[in-house]
Image 1: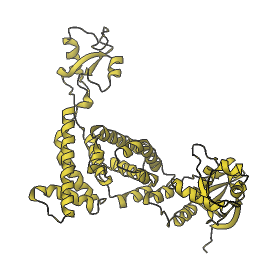
Image 2 (image 1 turned 90 degrees about the horizontal axis):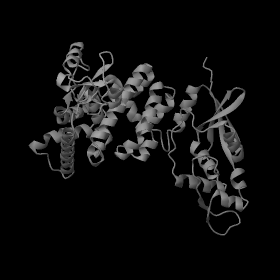
Image 3 (image 1 turned 45 degrees about the vertical axis):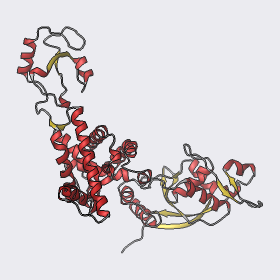
Image 4 (image 1 turned 90 degrees about the vertical axis):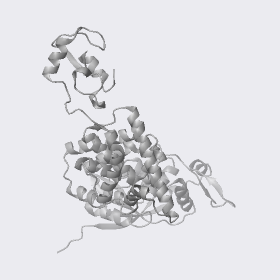
Length: 435
């Protein structure tokens, strides 16, 4: 026998009642499954206009749950309506008040009204006494999330990532992706990879999920198939999540540092940018690095020229002009971003093109990270002055270290002609810098 666990009942709450729930901590506007706000000030002003004119509004949905003897309400739907009301009343810290243009009762014309003006006119009851229709829902969290997804399937419908976020909001992998997204949000916007609107719809979180999964697998992925399958499996250990996150952070930092003008090229577009970051991540995993600024400049010049030529082919296509024989490589690349751009095979082709441009400029790190015991004895025995090259202190056999003059991380080799005696504090403080 199939029992119906989900239940719901209609209620009517005044704005004052809802405000009191919020002030007392019993109303949660941002449960884990909720999406980010996508309303702008114009949307909020229009809502307040409707309330001040006593127009009816659609019902909001609350998830009613008990905890420690108290009743709490998680907002399933209507977050932005309640948020707008509280912002108008100045009840949300860090959220600015706003005004709306409306003709108030007893007035002959429209005027701009904010909360202070409304109080001065002693008409605040138009807001505080307004009754919102509320549907209180009880059920298992899985059912509540299904309600959330169904309600938000119209209007500004949920993006795939917003649905993923709602369904798997307890996932440790998703939580780490969310942290990464917030950490790199500013740099992604600066590079014009994502707009503010896309970030509001959690596109940056989706990108971090893709990059983390690519970092874990060491290869590009098929976005449509891989992300949901990975979330369903929930098979990542904390160590795997940390490693994937660290790889993504390193790759993103390298891309932004190596190509600060990327926003001027087509490679800022999401499909191109993903492939470039995964390639740089692979180079790092393979021990490949750009060893000097000259090679870095050349890498940028080649990348920029490639981008321009791809754009030229695209422009000719719009004019119904075919690609010339020498433009075939650019036409082939263009196909990877215009047809099923998120398919794993297209992503691999795109990565292969970018590797062909940049690969020869990257040098292989020395497989030998440190100096051998034989090299240490030779360096110590052949040193005329056994002093630290950093601070000049006298060293002994028991406390000396050997420094890579050209850092290993920047292509320096563990060879005798790239070695110098150094005390441990100086060696540690030098880090990756050249002496």
